[in-house]
Image (cartoon, rainbow, N blue to C red; front, side, top):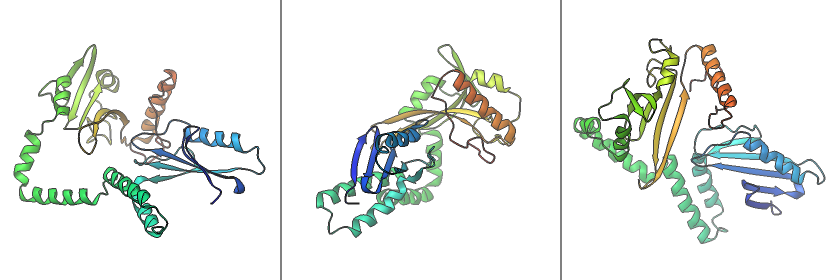
Length: 284
């Protein structure tokens, strides 16, 4: 590995490693609170081969798809690794190489691991706080249940109620400018709903087997989710739409294919499905 060339943010690749003597290239694609673009990993591989394969021999290109979430890579040449694995691999590596790692590097890696553990829920400090919270909950369950049900009010709840209307209940209709929606549910960080046009198309009185206890009971749902940072001072608001756990596989597959086709006809890249979403046994 001593002749390895390492490049960061080169040709839009997060980390690129080249071993010219062995004709071997390695790509690390990092996804932290983001998702892969369609065809992104394949394009990286093709780009690397176009640049380096004119040299002698056939270039072997492999990759790691490093992700915070459970998202499979679209290219089979990439092996998926979640950040939780880094929390296990990196401390062992630092311990084994302690004699040759500079002190400033060791401090940097320590801080890096603290951030990753917090994001993956593997922080020892966080685990201690959670254990204390469970202990308090067991001791004051009735009082805390009452507070959570009737007194949980945050800026997110206030913002959502300014859109939906205060006191709105499941199935109520609300208006945003010229668009109509059906409210489903909200708490201090999420709020679900359906466009009224979708409800009309799906049929209000139909029963969707498998979705009876899923969100609003329809085979489709939309929801906002607020992701805050550890300090609660910033974050991001994401909009999701999902096909639910319909028991009828053929109908679920047809629904996904029709949505996919509509997205292509409207030339939008905002509507995508994970690879294998329409396979039998998949639910979400």
